[in-house]
Image 1 (cartoon, rainbow, N blue to C red):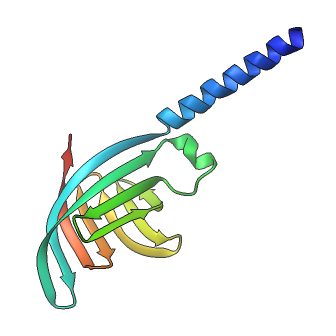
Image 2 (image 1 turned 120 degrees about the vertical axis):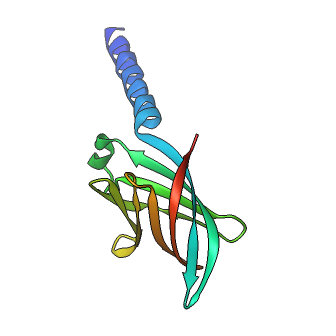
Length: 128
């Protein structure tokens, strides 16, 4: 009976730790970015929406990425970037682990990103 109590306590502790890690391992921020998309010589005004999920330090124990970035250009492009490296106040965005595709500054809220529609550059405003 004592072994069952210890086993139950261990399972309850593991479940609480798991819930803590799931609920508090990242901080989400949403942004609306207004700028220009260039494709070759053509440039057109564009609005891009971002959802940045910044990971806490302990996520680095099992993940190489410092964050996750979800990008949406309404009715045209949706993509999730799973590998981001934080360098100071800037996230370097990679489409694949070795394929650099852009950056996002948390200090100036500037986004420069190569998408399948062209290269986007713009200023972002945090959405509440």
